[in-house]
Length: 354
Image 1 (cartoon, rainbow, N blue to C red):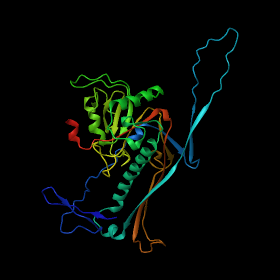
Image 2: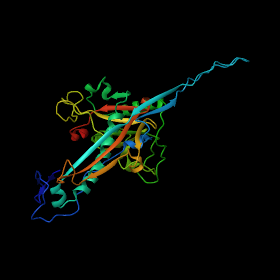
Image 3: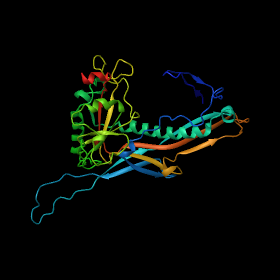
Image 4: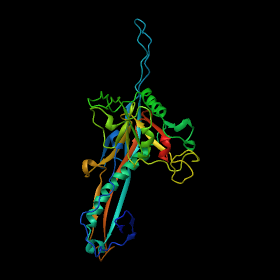
């Protein structure tokens, strides 16, 4: 574990480099640590949450009865209709095991001015939350129901920002599959400049798409909602039957689209377009499974261990460790109730208003 030093010259420039964990000298050391970026979590809002009891199994099966077609034929007097059989379908998932370890040297632990063990535990707890969100995003964006921006046939050809029509197409697909919306109609408030919000599905995406979404006809920010409360502090707004939640943790597929050329779309490598998924889903489409254990609310059975003291492998107690291990599973429960839109994000925002 090292220390990143940054020097502020009072004008606006920062400089510095990573150093060792020694004390800062000839300066006043503020005891409270500066605030750092915290996890921004949204995906669990859309998930059915289940637990596997400890020491039972590592695989879980979700089961549902299969709907049958509605027949409109009338029965003949005195004749019973043909009987039907009830069928079920299963969705299987297997828990995955994850772990992280932070190392603290004896110099940092005994001579350093920071409480490195406490701070490591705090950072580790946030890291677990970030990893769980990343695992969910990776799993939930593997669905088979995909709309590629601009009507192209594959991700390799994506070269347009999001359009209203793509949101409408996603919502139409969910409605055709009888997906359930998360929210009901908000009839609006008495304040001037507020608007009714339609019953809506959830749409999850990256904050880079804010400018493009703002330009869509009919988009309303959360500030323009009526009386209804937002579903999350990360809710950005609503467009027709989709309420949009965004965080920078819902990452794009970097350099996965068409050639940048004159598209004015963001690209990590500067050659091909970064492709941004927008995950539009209904209730009961996504699932999260944790191991029911000693962790808070069975939160994946997360256990944080602080290991310190002399041992055969470290007889002089040179190192301490803060470590944790947990189990996690994220999965799509119904592919028909999840639609993924894949688009680019405008790079030079000044061009949006030309």
